Length: 262
Image (cartoon, rainbow, N blue to C red; front, top):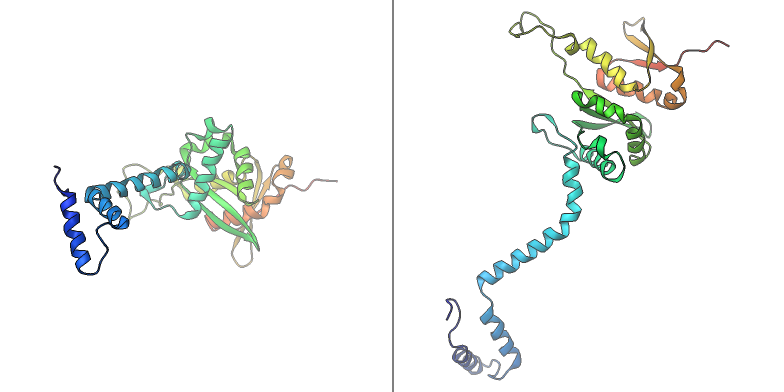
């Protein structure tokens, strides 16, 4: 006989039934007691553990198809220093993964990922989405940027989407930071990063002119003149460009098209 099982079920049943009969319990021939006793003989602790494991496996199988997209959607966002990903960034990453799976952009998107995403208020009741991408992947995003932005704006209910490369600004060399091994490259300066951010913001539209207006109170206003051939495509985004540029650089900018002579 196996350990943990009763060797003589008939004697145990008689002893248990006699004890219950003497105390006013069920009789020996009760069908319900016989079934209960039979189940009690077969139930052991290892069997209970196996039942729990079986239920857990069924739960995993049930949620495997549901969590497949979520897990792979998280692969489309990689943050520096393993920083936590918030709910909105997960939504953006999942939207990009859905486009990779459901459209013919799979070959273009399979090696691309983002670093962060956030939502900013443009005006009353209207918002824009700022997506930061790694600098080394910027060219890959720009190859499909027009279609990618168009599809993402559909998924985010018409919110304007802006793709900006993630760049790092190094402090200017001074008395307190002269321990650097090499001279600071110009591409890491504040001026260069802000200029590159401006180009990323309006891409693929070209900037044909810039003017800086100095106000009486000492503040500055940057006037950015865009190529008029893209007027129909970006004219409705001029306010978004101003808000996003202010959010990223802290500078005021006004985007406009050149006035055509009549």
